[in-house]
Image 1 (cartoon, rainbow, N blue to C red):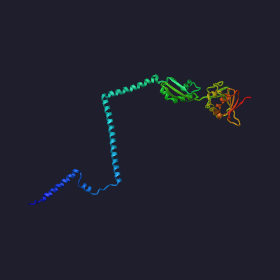
Image 2 (image 1 turned 90 degrees about the horizontal axis):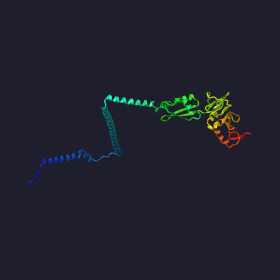
Image 3 (image 1 turned 45 degrees about the horizontal axis):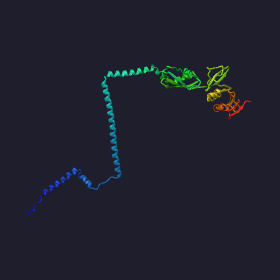
Image 4 (image 1 turned 45 degrees about the vertical axis):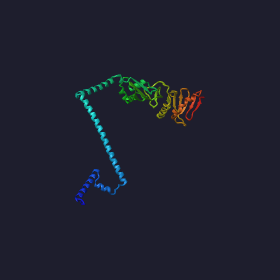
Length: 324
């Protein structure tokens, strides 16, 4: 039996073809000799903290990429909106010629001017009524005369010049401290007045001069007798004494002020601010000037319980002594 000898060349060819097939398989599977060599070796792992940092870096990079993409989308949306608006304008402009557009603009301006002129000359833009509030002694006519206000004046102009009319009123009438104009309704302005009240009279010769609560004397308004039921001030030797008494007396209620006939400055050793007040009901009151508004308000309740005239002492406590 003849033994078949193997051809060495055939063995070499088979080996070569086997290596080539193996190499092709590696290429198709994505592995090469280097990766095989690395995987066959002992795998080296990174420390945990390095892996965490690497993950964070990847996350931040992905967030930045997302943010940039979002900003880019927003900018693209804005550009699209702008382009749409511009395209609409172009479409509208195509409807009219340039000279026609100029004519339309001119007509719109003329219409606005015409409406404004019609409003200014119409009764809707004029004051039809003034509502005066805050006065006690001055009449509405006196307020309007002092301020120079009258019906038919331009509503908006008059309202805007409220400070001017206030200054005019103060210069013409000393009893007006301040006034303010506000819009009450379409054609009505409200005039709020801060009034300086009369608190009595000072006698000089045979004339009685009205005096205000701020101490000013009305030289223009003189009378041969007291009017309005206000008291006469007598015996004062200094303006400071009189102003203090006037300020306190001005805080009293209107009925109580009209119940006083005369106020006399009457100090003594015990009280250097003592006032002797003569009442219209025949009683007398002794009181300190600096406590006039605080204690005088108890007088009506005191005399309501009495059946005879006398003197009420309100300097310290409250005492009443009938006339003998």
